Image (tube, rainbow, N blue to C red; front, top):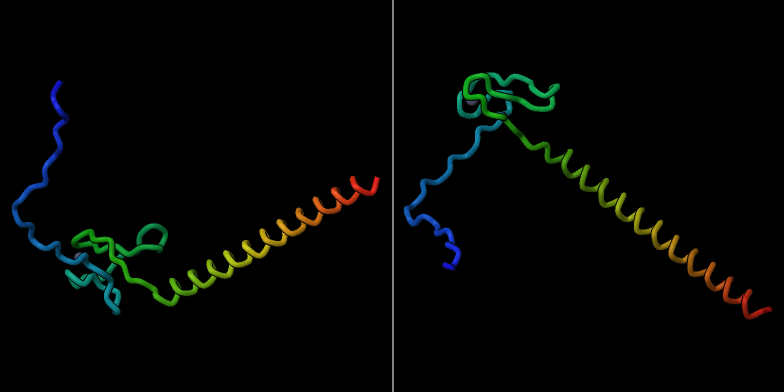
Length: 101
Ligand SMILES: [Zn+2]
């Protein structure tokens, strides 16, 4: 039985990957300058010339989503701690009831 062959990486140099087209401030493709078309129910924009999925990052919306996730995570942690404390108190009450008999 022979040892399994390990794939080797190609050694030739790669050209740098060009940046993906994006949505400019005036709603056009950054590569073609063509007005973008809405896609996926208006959630995405597509260039009708190069068919690029154009993106622009709404930083404020992203930060709002992150802040909401942090608040939600803190609330879940607070509820979990409250549940643990309640379970601990119930166990103590059960133990005390056993010893009182
Ligand atoms: Zn384009």
